Image (cartoon, rainbow, N blue to C red; front, side, top):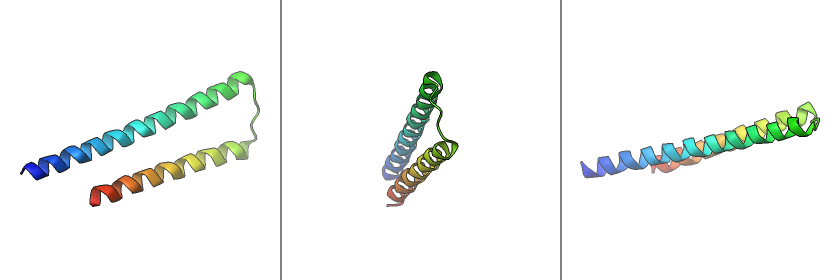
Length: 72
């Protein structure tokens, strides 16, 4: 019983941490975008797309990693 509770707590903590990381990444992205627009820096479209895809890939990796850890 205690073990189950501990596991649940761990899972919750992991999820929270993941959420926090995602939120922070989102915020950073937003800030970057805002800065770009403020400074009137014209970015080529493909670069922006590349950045977004990279970011998504990173998120996927993080989620995979955490899931792997949870399964252990």
